[in-house]
Length: 414
Image 1 (tube, rainbow, N blue to C red):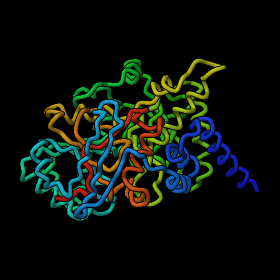
Image 2 (image 1 turned 90 degrees about the horizontal axis):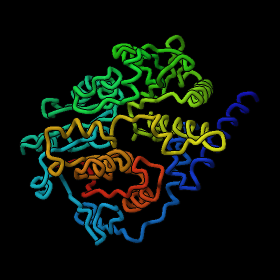
Image 3 (image 1 turned 30 degrees about the vertical axis):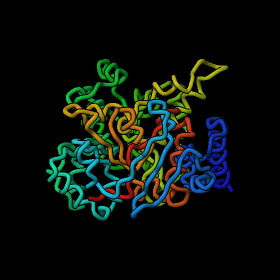
Image 4 (image 1 turned 45 degrees about the vertical axis):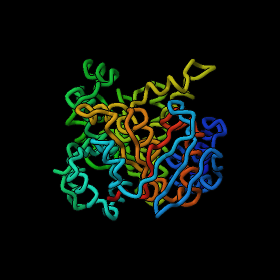
């Protein structure tokens, strides 16, 4: 009975967040918060079927490739009907002639977490033979050495890539206040904390070297009451330096500690560094990722200090949550420091991170639709339905901007 009451409390919390924050937007758009609090993908899957196809979008199949004719609603785009050009493979001459630098997402484009997708190894080799610069942009919260190991295990030659940039590496540099050595700006909030030697951190972790990650950057794990910063790098553990709460051991305790910690932190307006802005992982059930924690904490900040008790707005609340990775500026600054953005293209599966990031950075985008995070929804409702649903949402990282990929392909293949 007691456990049921506890579970009902978190369901009520979930519904309160939805009703307060969504302003009646489609449930799909709030999936990160729903999944973070409930641990269930059912809300997302149920909501997916409710999308309406945008009347300005049409899609057909030609020669096994997805072809989209799109009347773009992107404010930066032409008001005339334009084509989101379908390519059957990367060997398309238009792609090879127009782009020299290829920014590659990993999970959902190159592999599924356990094995490379069909044709990907060959595609990388062919791009290398074509003299193209390839830079991996991964939202992994781990250091790039971990990506090296994974790529080798999957059969890739890491020497084929000109650079491998992970959110975890860039976040680590920010914690050390030396991100400029990588080619991006430090976060002023962290700079001030480091200079003041206020380097106590409370961690929502992955359970994989969370403490060494922090201590190697000069930070000490501590309680939420003593913390100067929250680090969100995983959704499996909560670590205060003396006690580690594991979600797999006691999920209700995990959610209880998370809620209590966010309430204390929001009251103090503690800053949060999110070292992986992905909200869900393109895996079975679409489990939550640290980006969902960032979204939820942002809403805690806002609702704790908004009118009538304060003047906090949604926009001001964002100042307290720094997200590192796609679609945000830092990783693109690093990737493009020796490249011409007009000759660069981002290849990714996620509209919210890959395509939005490409749009913000002024580079081309190639959206992979039959692998990765949107594959199931594209199969159910079509690619244009997914784009329409995304662009109808003001609660994504696009923050109301309409995005449209330049190119669409089924898979990352040569």
